[in-house]
Length: 173
Image (cartoon, rainbow, N blue to C red; front, top):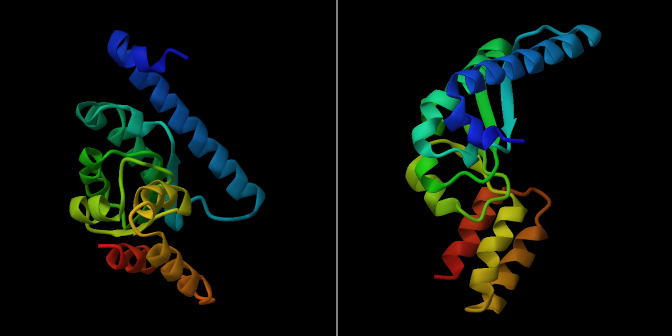
């Protein structure tokens, strides 16, 4: 509570707290690795964050990116991925700044395949939860085309959701 005011009212204290939170998460992950007799560092790692997108773009260099970087450096020297819930199109360029190789958009009505493709060059996943925001807007225009494409692809036991979305989107233009 109060975090969104703290970045304005107490920016230095907020940074200290963010540092402590990342340290705590890294300590916990190392503890779990020790329990499972696994190395602390892995060839790849994925970050999950549902709060970073709530900060404005001008705050990211100071209040988001340093803590993502600290998290990744504590867990991998290899491939980086992230699930960041509800990013806005103007925040997508930060994904490349972070050195990500893949992005999971989570459930967001602010981005779609086109905006992700236009604003960053990496593999991305598009969850069906996000998909429904897009679908609801398209169904009114052409429900039979949409449903037919979806059903044909869902019969395929090997799903490539990126291709499915592209196929449906292409069929509805």
